[in-house]
Image (cartoon, rainbow, N blue to C red; front, side, top):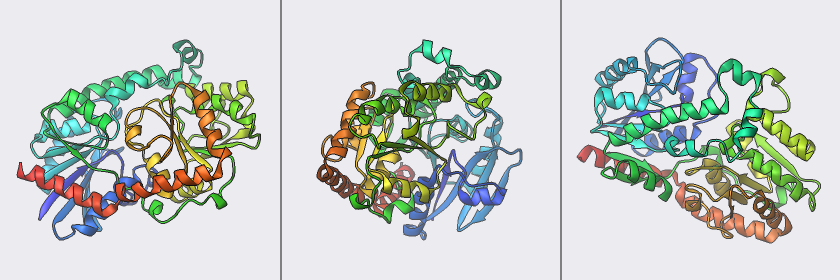
Length: 419
């Protein structure tokens, strides 16, 4: 039986239960992928999952046939911690994996595994690429404006957008070092393939699509059940996600649709945060809302569970992904799986997900006027919205097939073992 060790950035629900802490709302797609690989290859593959966590004790346990390894992580996740190498050697000794699958390159613990245990049997799954993302971190907001909006919270925590970008630049160097040290890399788009090639042209590139969170396979968007003239953004807590561009587009949409509502999941910049605790980006967002007088149009939902997120998608007239950079955002995949009409900025790997005017609408990130017109185009024509929905859902069924993606990843593991 093949033994595969996953190294993840996010704790799985079973690990959170073991630690008696709330399960995170992020990373559900990895949980779905684990369920699929166990379902279809339970007699051929034994899965282990290792994750750094905010504790000082090395822990192991088993749940639902999976071996879990909880590794004490560094206090500052963007910095390399040589002590982790000792734990990785211990995990390898105890589990003896045939394949090690590192999920994500954003943090240096993947590199510490390779430095400690070697990279011959390692395959790295690229989620985003911080070595590219850092170029677009400020989301085209002028530096002068960013400096004017540095908040008290930013100063106290030494966590302004400038410091966040610097930390991302540090992580970027670790990311490039990791990608240079492995022979197998998994990506999802032509965009990430180009950047992987630029860093390590000798690595074998494998393509494997995401398995989405389970609830998104069970429902379908209907134009008869939506809140008309409503927009949904799955997140907007830092500049890359482009919330500020959406806010600039709102006054243009309001000229024709005064009942517009824009729902934003994640951080609530209106309430629940004391003024002195708000981030510099939050401060800037509130200044834009005041400048354009659009407070009545914006609803911050707070953090949503998987089910709550799905319900919000289904109620929406359109989903917008206004990011300054993306690889293959699951928000677009989830919207397409449900059939929600989608608009996204023309950046990164987005064009692998959306065919303009067929499966969604694309616009240039900086030009919020184009975003506003794209929204109006869908609001104006219900038949067009339905055609986008149908055209997007059909390929999504194949692209995000749990069985196909499980088959593909098992095939990749076989290739890694063979080599």
